[in-house]
Length: 470
Ligand code: GAP
Image (cartoon, rainbow, N blue to C red; front, top):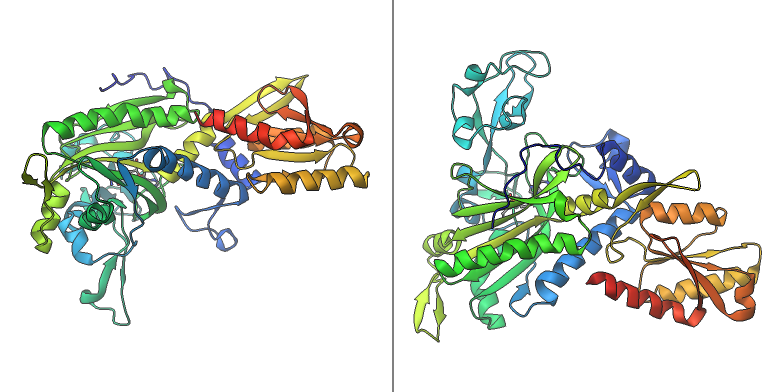
């Protein structure tokens, strides 16, 4: 089920040439801001503004809809960020969750080895080779100074729980949500009475002390994951489930508008596999900075439940009444990032067009993901009856969807502003509306306009949203 990777990086063009286009739109229109900006910012943490929080919430809702609401075999969970520290020892994160770090002997800057020019395609074995820096003649990109041999740098953030800061009080900020699902396997299975195969879905914050974060919200130190752990019978059933989840997860991105040719699968080489994985395939997206991981699908075997059963002494076997067997279920995981998915939808929706000699910027977001579904606009803001009708309509729409009122510019400019933030429908109230009780509904993508009775607007919007959802 693996697509042949495209060898030429530029064979598939990105949706936008420069990341700066998205960064500046995000700042200007209130999608994403640098964290703590008035203090100069903090590296690799970003804040979602009024539009960004709507977009990201909609992405999370769309994921939950596909993974929990529409299925009968997956249930939700919201585990704590802080967990018993032994969880992270057992999971292998304390011992193995690390990246290869090199340090410049003169300026002391630190780099992730595989992010350095000339080292991007090294195998996992090469990245552990103490002689690799010398062999490739790598030097510090900042001052040309000599670089140290690679050493492993653990990515987990730590803190202390309680008033005493000693070794016994160390806690870890979770680097993945998955472990919360494993340690709750029995609680969830017994309370929901689900039979294997079944899944546990979670959305929540994770933290990684990344050596070289960057590319805007692509790699952050605080981010949100949307992960699902699917518990299956050992062996062949896990291999089959793994193959089934690959197209299902790719289809989710396409369902919400990502161009299929900007998505591909990439299988991890055996020396690249995470410590828990038997097999791993990434869904990659053609970002402006290259093909990069969007989501990982992993066959984790019995590593997780097996390790936790052994370390905790708790019996985590499942009893299958149909075959009279006890076994430790294997796990097939779909691991996506909420920020990375929202970022991808934002990039892929960006269009620049020329309309009547002028540039029009449109975010062609699937309506389900758009921050605002409807903007209600008065053609004449001086007419109190028109403004009053606009507010009545907006208030009524807002009971079901995000709807905004705007009268701060002329109608053409108001349309352009809504196009740029992806609002699928604008409703204009004019003088005739006061007579005939009808308003004009304008479509973002086609710019066509239709006259609709005021009382029919909500039905129209809800029907079109339902169609867009697929
Ligand atoms: N439980 C398995 C796991 O965490 P992963 O491939 O390390 O797998 C899953 O992470 C997804 O989480 C990635 O595909 C990405 O979308 C997101 N992610 C991981 N690290 C991230 C970071 N530093 N910033 C933003 N998103 C990140």
